[in-house]
Length: 149
Image 1: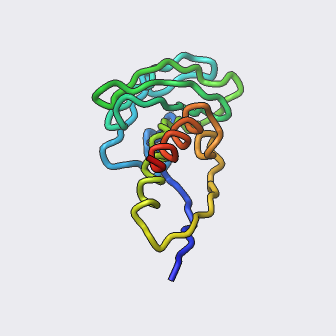
Image 2: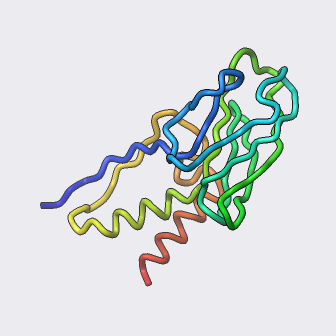
Image 3: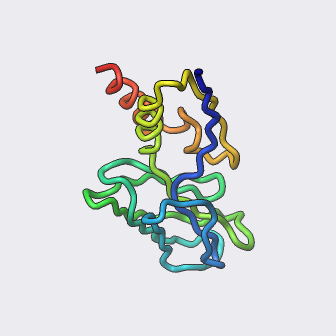
């Protein structure tokens, strides 16, 4: 019997300013820190992360603004962001990589009874769409090409 996989992905790590509590389900090892941890709209903030996939690209999402980063060989990153000038109250800062595309293709390839999958995203974050960023599209393309060989 063939199955159809319905996929809703919660990946990456996030924090809310100034409350400093998780904003989304995150891999146990992935952590994000902000310096400073709070500040006024328009302020510069350093975002640091650890526990992400090594040597891959990712995106920090702050409201509708995105900031790119590349993880090191150990899976850490550090990048500067600017809190949107229109921000008020607590805002969500989320860090994500496109590595989940490769993991998805590998998982599906190992399931002989899966004939396809349905894609949707619940929170409509920019990097959750398969083609939302260059790194996301490239990760999926490379994963699918690797499956052919």
